[in-house]
Image (cartoon, rainbow, N blue to C red; front, side):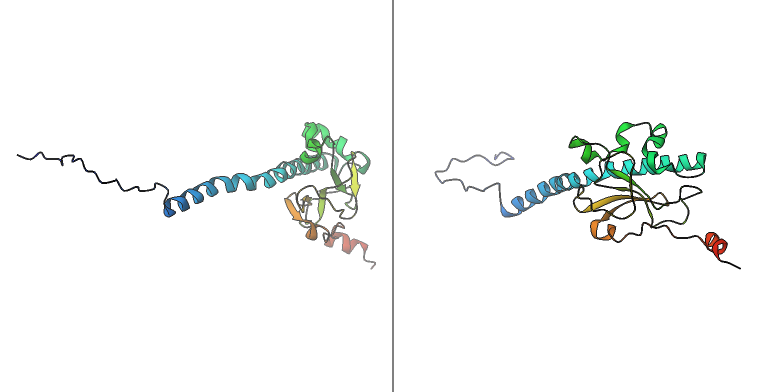
Length: 191
């Protein structure tokens, strides 16, 4: 009676070598490695912008809270110090890229914004706080200045408190002068 399994038979023939790394296997391995490494390599550039956007958003929120309590933005000469009790974190006032290079600050307030009243309504495209090359506290700008810290992008907080990373070419075209509201227009028209 034969066993239910095949018997091993010794032969003198060489066994056929089947390589484990065939073309489909190599392709699959390359795709798997790329799928794992690609997001890791791409987040390096984005990770430099994200803390900067977060800092500008926190400064904008602090400016909003300050304006609610004081009926307007802080004075241009001391805006960063006046916001400090609200955000209570030293590094918020500095761009992380500047901090890593041993510097401080790197943000500026739009010097064309009015100092009194609610400056946050209707200004969705007016910059309020922007990155700047001026590494001084309480920097104020009245026009776009080229910043080269984030690979061709500039972190901007707009008047309606949304934050966006803007390409340098678009940043240079932003209007720093806020729009005049209809209420102000009607008051200034002589009758």
